[in-house]
Image 1 (tube, rainbow, N blue to C red):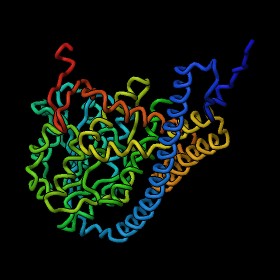
Image 2: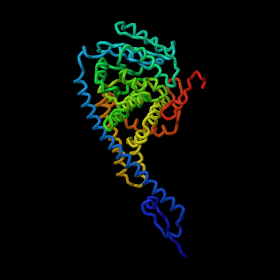
Image 3: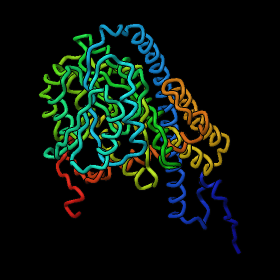
Image 4: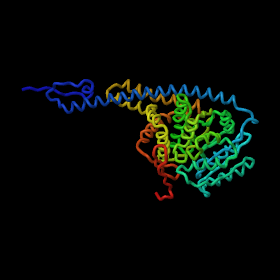
Length: 430
């Protein structure tokens, strides 16, 4: 009688599949080989992602050095009050956003010799206007006006800016969101670069200011680190060719060179587009060394996800190649992939190394960008939030390729390239 012991360990099969056993099941052996191949492919992807995120961290470090150098140069070139030009601040409002009164009031406390503030709302009964009127009454020495514009254009905020620009008394226009808080030197530091006629626009980075808890904090730390790192690297590699929505500063002549706000009426990423078009028109776009606060109020995962997805989709359509490549700047997803694949292959040392490298990468980026550039206090209190945010960022990046609609304010938008193809408001009954 003939017998043969064909017992085998799965790990042995993955390392070196044995042939010639009479009881071997060839389909099972094929599955084991396939599993072995898949694990090594996953490990290869993890190693590539770990290396690419390390390269990005290095570029961010150089970008940080350039940012500080440029910021020092800008501070040295601020003129005295007699040479600071008058400016018009344009601020659209919509509803009772978090810390709205504090945000608005910060613009009335500017250490700047001559400026006016224009507010615009879609509807006359917008709840934000009562807050605006209250703050205006407390600062009668600052010229302020309120406009009610309606929403005839696909992008209602761009129409707000168009109406305010038409009514503005001064040549320099400072456009800013309602969820932004600034310090008293804001205007004094962001306006002077526009005294150079070759500069057509100024924009600035921002730190997230958490106003609503855990989910809001994930968005805020993403603004402070992930968003800022991307801007610094873009500025390093190709110069500023876009704007950042919380603040852009333009002259009326540079704005007119691209057709004014009319040319932007159906752009979803109007802030990116205005900077991009001004750069194409031959002007320089300058990244200011001034940092502002962007107040974040997202109390639920759903609101946070919608907000993150909207940003990712606008970036996807505005900078398709850059957005696709940004899938390689994340670190934690590749560290986890490497850990899991190495653990299944029995390489526990390499598994631990890849995971630790990913965590250290994100902690280093958080300190380098989130603390030395934007001075976000959350980086010191809870640095572990950024590795978690990195995982969320990768999920949002992936999801940005799955959906063509996004939600903003009380409207749903459908995109066609960089343009708004369909806009539905809550009044449409949808």
